[in-house]
Length: 95
Image (cartoon, rainbow, N blue to C red; front, top):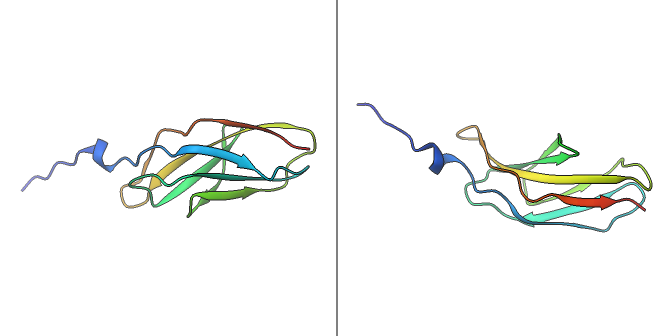
């Protein structure tokens, strides 16, 4: 029996409401709404993946003082190996 999968259904929804808070000279906290179908989240800094988070928040450290950064996150589904569209971008300037 041939089983077809609806790839759209296996794709997690994009995370929403990405916010940055607690900015310091070298760190920032990111929080977003949990995404339907996600088993984790990829965190991107300036277009490059920096880590994977298992929950809908992440603390970025090791940043440079007085520097602009752009962050976004995607939802991933480990079971199907899929990744959502990116969240909106949040821009942060360290202190």
